[in-house]
Image (cartoon, rainbow, N blue to C red):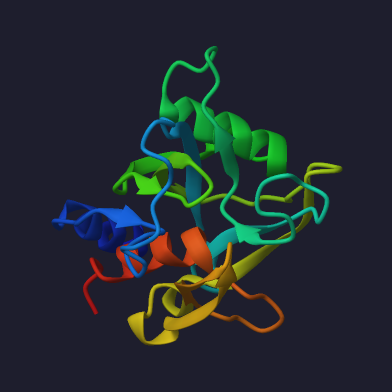
Length: 199
């Protein structure tokens, strides 16, 4: 029998969706037009557990070049050796949190998200319906944690905040959860999915 949460997510992914970008709230801030965006992919991993579905997220190591210390989906750049963006998302997820790709059931993808740091990120929504013991990648991931899915996909959780970036004030979405500050591209991708799910 298919889990009701899986049905809920499949229905959500079938709904129309608009573009997704770090620039949605900042139309005056754009990357240089002569530099093509680098392809990347992430997994939006939904863990179907007896106590309730949870969204798996990571806290990136503080020394990393891109998005240090931030809350993120597992994923990364699409390599030339990857068969597809989906394959890249699953490969990176296995490297970052120790999740075997064979245990992930991909339900679909979300609109490509353009980041202010020059990436075009394709998010893939996948479910895990068996026991899983996350193993953070040493040197890359400081922590792996879970947020209740209903919390993460509640539009009311998202607020618009701002900070100075390269001399201008940049606005972004945020969805704080306990000690974790979910913001930027991760929050924008989540909000896009939240807008598509039925109550």
